[in-house]
Length: 279
Image (tube, rainbow, N blue to C red):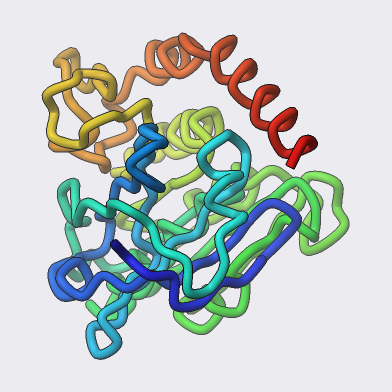
């Protein structure tokens, strides 16, 4: 059992929890994730990126959006409640070294997994330009935390309610076309956003790293649910990733796989809403 030490609501549907997990906190590196299972009677397992860790406290920080049945149930838990199973750290850590100049883009909830990577890249001596985006001002998360570690921060909203009224690809193109150009680009967020970030960077011949969040069950590569095509080869996000060279990822194929269970997911969500109404 893993006890919830603290809980905070960041926006209407986005929550941050700090969970007791001393062994994971000790071993975790930027870019890695955990798989959680709420209780023994509720079998769904979902991956969540480790947004931060405190070795002294023996805790990890998880940020999630309550969009499906499991995340809605997770959002109902309070400080002191326990999560039955927390498996990790999983996945390959981010390659952290001194690249030079780095531009990093986080879209929506993708800012959460981006944050520890930004911290590590800055500590390694890189000049970091961060771009974070959301649909509206209310959905912008971790702005203060990102501002504290980045050399430059650009905030975008789709509706112009805060920061620049622009998609994140616009300032990304401006940064990539300027001199000196970045030595590395990072993009984490919705798959469509990452796809277009990659296409924005591609003409400038800048390496671009993306972090994929696909359908995942066991986190060990055995179920095959998280398979993607990268550079013409089949890869498993849970053990070969979650980070890949975005220029080699077949995003269209991945998007089709993510939609494979859309109908079942919608039905599960509707059932969850009905259950909540009758409590």
